[in-house]
Length: 283
Image: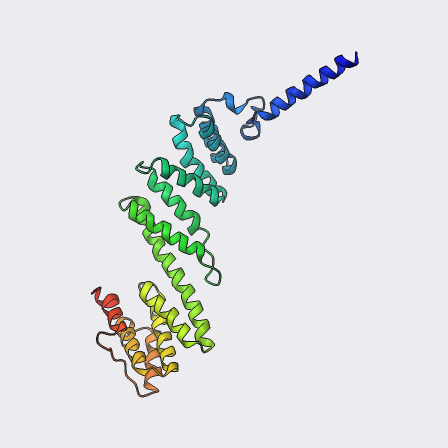
């Protein structure tokens, strides 16, 4: 009698264990509590994942797409599931998962029409998490690299056009970081360090909105160092390119207070910058 009782409960325990080992999709798909995901076709899982995404449950949708790929790796739906999982993870705010899925898609289908979108999602996963200029800009740098990759690999795509706009904004953000650090050094009398930061802006981010101020701050730093010739050369570049700006007016006032006038120095560093910024010449 006791042995039969034990065997009956053991059978129940084994049955429950087996059920728990099979992933059900009731938690994802509502009323189908008794349906095991392994029993659904690739198309059924894909459709259910799409419904989850449309219903505002992107994290569950991403999991469903991933399960489809695991269960039916060679199906037609598996290919779509990878890029769909990347998008769903992105919408859910799970950026590492979005990058992983998009990167896998690029590895498997580098020449596919959706490859540009996969690369764009990777770039967006960084771009959307850019922090203010007071903090570390590693994410901003990664965003710039990935956006540049979109343009390089898929130059004629719609995503490349949007990436170019975001590259400009990202460069402006990185220039802003350099300006923040440069002003910090300038205010504390670390003029050489300040000069180095402002030159980075002029050399690497010369098309951004920070260029006029960077030139003005360089004039300030050079005058503080007693480098008057360098100061007037920078002022000349500022005057040629931004003559109507408040920054040039402030620079001109600094120089005239010392009986100096803006004047370019031929073949110097800032004359090369002048040719690049104003004349568009790189030699």
